[in-house]
Amino acid sequence: MIKKFKSIKESQLTITELMLPSNSNFSGKIHGGYILNLMDQIAFACASKHSANYCVTASVNRVDFLNPIEVGELVTLKASVNYTGRTSMVVGLRVESENIRTGETKHCNSSYFTMVAKDSHGKSAPVPGLILTNKQEIRRFTRSIVRQSEGKNRTSRFSSKAFKTEDYINLLKESNSKIELSN
Image (cartoon, rainbow, N blue to C red; front, side, top):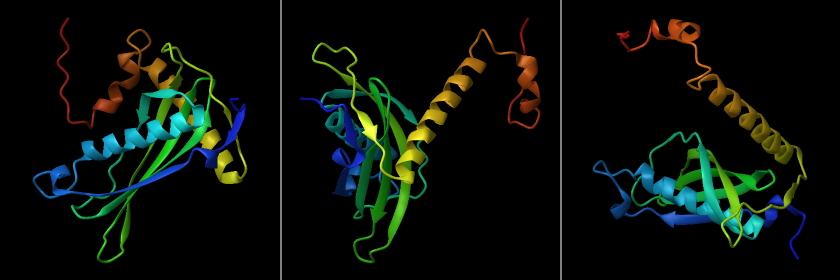
């Protein structure tokens, strides 16, 4: 029987992987794309574990690479469901690296993946809600609600039908751009 609500701990995941030379760029740093691939994998696993369904990535909210990851470091990815809608979930991810020799750890990035549960026919499937047990979990859940509403507002403001050049032209004055409008 599928639960109506689940605790966050029931689907939290952590993976750790040694960074190999085959995943590096020419300067010996790990490719950002490789880290994004790992992030997508753990987001999928976390969302699938929570929903008990196959899940797809609907969107990724901002990925800032804060610190480089070196070959030979251990990378740990932590994932937990921060928010549940009707068929979607926001999975919060944190990436840290550890220098094996010194024990020094670095926060490399954090991100939020919106995942959608799919049934066996490929249709969006309902997901269990979250049982929020502390202020941190409530903060993360409500932050996802606010982020969603801000995203919808940003998208509608800049749609081709709603956008008014005169409302934003001042933003371009100090920018690295040159305007040459054609009639």
